[in-house]
Image (cartoon, rainbow, N blue to C red; front, side, top):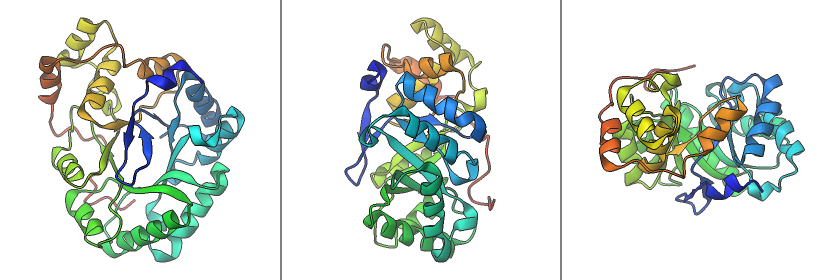
Length: 279
């Protein structure tokens, strides 16, 4: 096993499963490039891979996982149910299609990708996710892009509390209300677009911390995420950046540096607003 793997901390989810706090995301990586990208990430030491049905690259992820020769228990694979498959009648088929493309008999985490605007449908899907977990087709279940009120509706069903809520989160959009609700229910907050698609890399507070520690701006932001307690899934198809995104454990931001990044919060959303987005 790559020595980098041993440095990645894990978090215990509210269902008792362990999840690496730092993983590799494949959003916007074309399927024909995904196998090489994921293989490179696994070589670098990543063991958590985040994909989704709508990304169109689950097959590429699956080829890389199969070629790696790594034991299944060393891997943590996340995929997501797309909006078109919300509802009782299609959720099960959505996971079956994903498993087929991934070449797996189960995933480690299955998420509802977006709530959409039909409350009944995402609540139906959640109840099916509970069934899929009971059947061993996914070890953990969670949601993505759920606002506090949407999250409370899921919890209000009285069944399983989501293990993870994956949301857009970075210094320019810190999603504090959602993160607070997640914490109150023992739900892990996972950050997508953790670097704000690069928008935060040139901020003076980030550059000052990078200079102080002799690291890159992206490393500072990813370290900020880890110290916030977030799960984070940076994406890069460049081997050197994959490696530097893993190299976060030889330095620590001090309270002044953390406060400077905390102060960057603004309306810096790069993706759709979850309350209105319907695919």
